[in-house]
Every structure is written in C-alpha cells, then in structure tokens.
Amino acid sequence: MSTEAQDGTLTVTDNRTGQTYEFAITDGTIRATELRNIRVSDDDFGLMTYDPAFMNTASCRSAITYLDGDNGVLRYRGYPIEQLAEKSTFLEVAWLLIHGELPTAAELTQFTKDIADRMSVDPSVEAAVKAYRKDAHPMGVLEAGFGQLSTLYPEAKEIESDPERMDALYNTIAKMPTIGGVAFRHNQGKDSVAPDPSLDYSTNILKMFFGADYEPDPRLVRALDILLILHADHEQNCSTSTVRSVGSSQVDPYSAVAAGIAALYGPLHGGANEAVLVMLREIGSKENVPEFVEKVKNREALLMGFGHRVYKNYDPRATIIKKACDDVFEVTGVNPLLEIAVELESVALNDEFFIQRKLYPNVDFYSGLIYEALGIPSEMFTVMFAIGRAPGWVAQWLEMINDKEQKISRPRQVYVGPDERDYVDVGSR
Ligand code: ACO
Image (tube, rainbow, N blue to C red; front, side):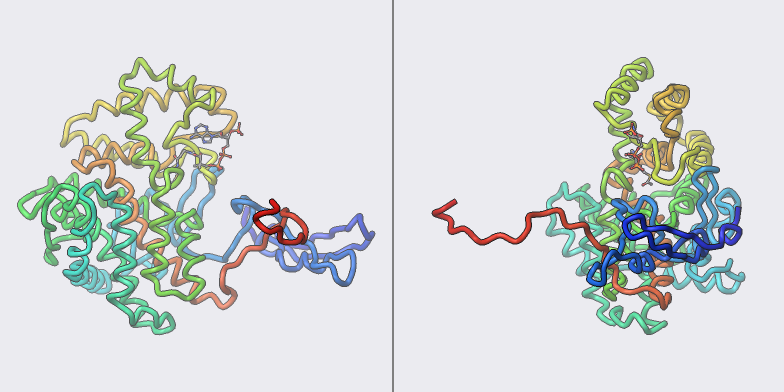
C-alpha cells in the first residue's frame, strides 16, 4: 500500500485532561513535534515519544532507497536491486544514488574518469599509516584516514558550495579503497600500490590489495563489483544515520563519513561479515551445526549474519550473494566453510526459534565467504563494506544538506536520575 493511501487524520483523547486533539497523518506518519501540544498544564513541556534505538521513528524524508523488509524488497532510486546487480556497475549505481537518475553514456564516462583521477591519496596518508602498529585493524586506520582527508581538504567545509561538496563526495568514493589498500598492505608489512587510472574501479581495488602484477579473473572482478552494488545503500541504517547525524552539525563530509566508518565497524553492523567467518571457523564442521544452533537458542551465542532490524524475510541481497558465491567458487574452488554455512542456514530456517522471530540470513551471511575466496583477509571485510557503502553515505549526506527541514540532530531524553541534591565533601561521604 502506498503511504499516501494511509493519509488522513488521527484523533487522540488525553485521558488525563479529557481533551481531544487531531493530527494530520502524512505519508503514514504524524509529526512528533505536534504531540507537544498535548499538555496537562501551561508549564508542561508537552508529550514526547520514547523510542530507544529509533524502532519506529522516521528521521527524514528520503528519495534514495526503498526497503520493504516484510516482503524482501530493496530498490535504489526505484530500480530493483536484482536488476542493478545483474546489469549495472558499481560506479553507475554510485552516480544513480548521488544524482537520482541513471547516467547517460557521456556522464558515466566522465564520472568513471573523475573517480579514477581521484583515487590516489596524498603521501602523508601512507606516512601516517606507517606510524600505526603493524597489526592495526584496517577499520581503525580507515576511520583515521578520513579524519586526515578532512585536514587535507579544508575547503570541504564549504558545504553550501556545489563544486566543493561534489569534490568531497567523489573523493570519498575514490579514496575509500585506496586508504583501505594502504591499511591492508601495512598489515602485511608492504608498501602501498598506487591506483592505476586506466583500470576499472574493482580491478583497481584488487591490484591495490594484491600488487600491480596481480591479474584478477574478470569473473572475480564482476563478483566484487556486484558485492559493492549490494552494499551501496540501505536507507537509514546505523552508519548512514550516523553520517546524517554528525553531518547535521555542518562538519565537512569527510568527518561525517569518518563517523559512519566508526559506526560500521561494530559487530552488530558492518563487523558482522568478519564475525560470520569467525563463527564458521569455530563451528569447524557440518556435524557441529546442531550443537551450535542449540547454543544460539540457549542465548549463549548469536547466529552472526542472521536477523535484521528491518528485514523480516529473506534479505534480497543474500539471495544475490549466494548466486555470486557459485560464480566465484567456479574460479577459486569451493571454500570448505560454505558447507557449514549452507547447513547452518538450512537448520536455522527450519527451526521454530528462528521461524518465530523471522530471522533470515542477511547480506553478511555469505559475503565474507566471497571475500575470503578473493584472498581478502577477514579484518578487511568491513573495509569492503565501507567501500561499497561510500556512495550511499555521501548521497544521504547530500540529501540531508539540501533538505530545508533538517536541523542539527539532537534527540530528547527522559531524565530518570536523582532530583536536585547538595554536594557532600569527600571526607563526609
Ligand atoms: N541470533 C540469535 N538470535 C537473534 C539474532 C541472531 N542473529 N538476531 C535476533 N535474535 C533474536 C533476539 O534475541 C530477539 O529474541 P527475543 O525476542 O526472544 O529476545 C529477537 O530475535 C529479535 O531480535 P532483536 O535483537 O530485537 O532485533 P534487532 O532489530 O534489535 O537486531 C540485529 C537486529 C542487530 C541485526 C540482530 O539480528 C543481530 O544481532 N544479528 C547478528 C549480527 C548481524 O548479522 N548483523 C548484521 C546486520 S545487517 C548489516 O548491518 C549489514
């Protein structure tokens, strides 16, 4: 049902006062601030909603990504994810997310060149990374790298200037894999590999990781490009809403993206793909799956890569990734962990615990297996997610900056601490 079909009014009676209020329902929502009119006295602040973790609060109007979690639907700017994964490329999708329409052939050629020309990073970025411990987690390095970009491009503070902000947004997409590559090579004790502007985006990524001499099979390059497309945006998820929230302070976009990278790093968000591999290794063999599932049901473990705040059905991205897995394993040979993953999925999907809670595989259940087949170590998986999510972060940032209704993000709280009390000297406590 379209949200317009749900428009109308809502009549509410405050049983404390007997007063009745009427609220407009637009796009299936009421304006939370209008609830402030509901008061018991003149000095009452007014009614608020209490919504920890934003379970039922829309924070913006967005024309970028449509997600219907109950029916497993995902569309970028109206285009079904299945069609984009089959027919498009990551950079074309990036343009679509930022500009709202698919590019013309000339626009795509220019955009591809714009990104390729921006992929290299200032030498001070590698110098800074070299100062990190050799085992520095690449997500920490990536986060710091974006803080550093904000110092290298101070003009990005001019967020009202279209050329300046487009420069920053394109730089974000272009430099994310380069900094990721520097971090990865640092972990291996190797110097970085400079991007080659003559190569396509995904080939460049693999070469910056594995060396200029590495010649990736085109099927692997295509699988990587598909993975990036699938991760490109996912409306108001934890990291994107962080980018919007931090960006609402009008800080430069690099700093807002650094905050998004930090949010993505967490194991309940982008860190899940790494956690899935750790879990599969711990399970060790197909025979141990039932025992692990029992542990999950006894709340001793989480089934990583399962469950989603919005999807209460099969994540459509997981279906596409499963197919990409087959294509990749045709080239690389089957990853033995796949057998465990398939068994785990089958046992879970037939178990009442998971059925009742509508827990299905999410995008991260199989993505790690592909990354591993590409030779990418598990600490880099979340970096891969960040590379994919960069266009979504910047498209959402731009939409937020252009949205006249947006102000600095600042939630309310329900104070539950002590009433006023007098300070007690340390000797008398
Ligand atoms: N394993 C076991 N039980 C689970 C899982 C899981 N992966 N996910 C949810 N549940 C259970 C919860 O314990 C809860 O059970 P209860 O109602 O009996 O207490 C019920 O299912 C509902 O789960 P919530 O935690 O309320 O769901 P929420 O929307 O808050 O969390 C989340 C979503 C964080 C993704 C959760 O499913 C999870 O932790 N999954 C594992 C981590 C993961 O894969 N994250 C990647 C998410 S996708 C992404 O960021 C790209």
